[in-house]
Image 1 (tube, rainbow, N blue to C red):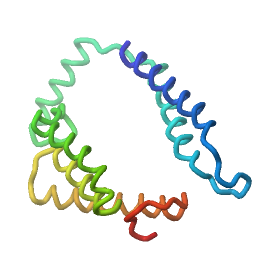
Image 2 (image 1 turned 180 degrees about the horizontal axis):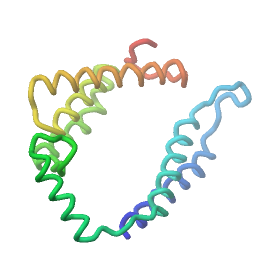
Image 3 (image 1 turned 30 degrees about the horizontal axis):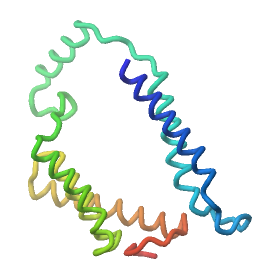
Image 4 (image 1 turned 120 degrees about the vertical axis):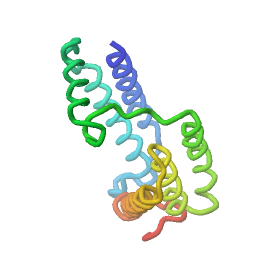
Length: 169
């Protein structure tokens, strides 16, 4: 039931974003420039579609037999099988660290630029989501760098946006 409520809420939020985007003034209409409306339209459409999908999904209720089969499979496969088991959410201390990463990201954009601050932010948050080892931090930092470069290229070349501190602009 909660999925339907949240799905309906997000669908309505997406619709509200799409409707309120109509009030954004186009700088140069008719030139082919998507202008400032493109991003809110994309976000609103995604919220609308995903909210509707969440609200209308049909899930088979889980029975005690289903749960006991999952538990037995987890016991049979052993602790080394990464595909079975339930991942625990981050601890409260890590959640605070993630929140601080979000809070620090905004002012860091002005100081360090988008590319450096986004790479640091993504590496920080991804590292706090799981066990912290040197190898995992390095892999997540590399993944953060790749995502940041892709986003920078997308914003500067595909969307033709001027974001301060984007590499490859």
